[in-house]
Length: 326
Image: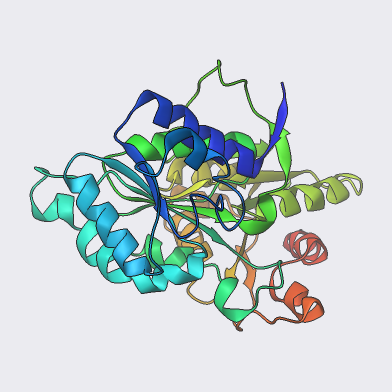
């Protein structure tokens, strides 16, 4: 199977579906001529034109409001917010309008839109361009939340998100954009359903339950631990909402020892929801140790690269966490 980057996989998903369905449009700041802040939409303006790939004014609230309205009237808009931090500026339309529409009209209407946004630290972009805010949007009923960790997952999940009748927040972690992985040829079309986790590595001694950028980091930690005779399972939840609770519970029951790893601030982070799922299920009675939660530090992201690297869980910290479970 060929290998392409995470960014290329996202672009392929958008282009392939836009060729099939003229209802799909892309909106955002610099997504057209410039090709997007991270180059994800490069070449799409030339193929689809300014009517379907639309450069917008610098107003996340207006961009998101336009997408909500367009979705309500029959289009399938994809919004690119330049940095996920700026979702804060779009919250009124995203949460008070888009997320609640289908419920408040008893299912008579729907808002099939995707809001794509690069998030996370590691690029030296400092406090206002490096946050991981997935817990905020996961707390809004009516939104679905996706964070893929591989090119294969990014393409398959985005295609499913485009046609979902609910608004989907699709978070792309910036350090993953240039990572490569196997993806089928465009002729081999595929979808990954929302709400389905994936065991990235089988194991029997402990479970690392994670998502996004922390998946490859957990996999590297698991390889190191394997060399020391410790067999670790890595479960990538892939979609936060809906959460594959059954996969989380089964992994916890299988190994009896669990660490939940995520990049966002530990306090109030989505990892606490995963812990809650395990603690309130039959998996609790299979545990041989208390569940560990390894999140980011509760600080704004520093600009200094040495300080920035200390904010999120490192491979060494993940290894130490697993050993403490044992």
